[in-house]
View (cartoon, rainbow, N blue to C red):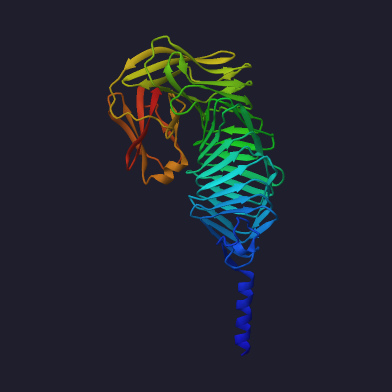
Length: 450
């Protein structure tokens, strides 16, 4: 009997402290705090597991709590007050969470649908984790405040779309944004949005024309990793500690334009500027406001033919710049190899077509940012770099080097993101390095051996 009573007490204690609340809407409105809207006949509390399907629910009149929440089948949860969740809020691919005001505490969002911030009212994220796998939108939202340990993970399939002025600001503790997908600053009128927290970019950060992304405060870090891309026709205003190991590509998707970078600009030897060229008068330009040292790689993507002596001013600066670039480089269009003189002056970098040679090389594959060789040209050793994601995605990776006749002159496996290769035994001239996986050739980089 004592054992039975003890077991009954344990079961009653469990059910009194852990209860499932399923939304049924029988209260006739969309209010979270109407007990009649829940199958349990009570309002969810801090121990409640909540399920909302095919309904729009508002948290408005008071602070709400839950243990976890599942939103399914086109459910919408609008948060307009303080909200504490000790576990996970799962947002299905057809569901939405709208955050309009209040302090969110402890919650982890697993977002496969839409997580949207809107209205100019105060919003605080306190010890919050956002795992964004689809769409996170900031729409006319003002400032979003981050406190304690708050992390935003934008995965490869995720998009963070910002159509708002204002910003996301670390108020206290440590806030971090890890991007593997796409972050966009967009809008139909000129606008600026500032980010004051550590940002690690392995994906793409895009800023549309007449828009500005500000990465601010010297105590914060903005790192563009080897597989990261900064792109667009607007402006990046950077006063954070900027480390650039990746790509800068004005006006992505083979559309030419000008990208501005204000204040801190970092372009070391292992970074790459990608320039799309439609003609001698229509090509990408990087406009830098500062006094930078330019010593990274220039990758010219020719989309049409050029003529001998055509000049492309691809980098401009408002203040004197310093160059440590190769004096020559090459680019390719169809069967033609274009040789450029790289001309650095006090305020610009210009590429001048010095020679054009027509080659016959089969199976040429565009670089597409998978394979980078530097320094290029080289006369002794160069380093091949590939993204870490490529090592994870493919079972086998190797480099094969061919000459202009398509003859293989070297081949070796790739097991690291960085591999050193000696070209001193090769005759001077043009070669091609193919990145090869079990699925075939993934990318080709042109090599110039001096």
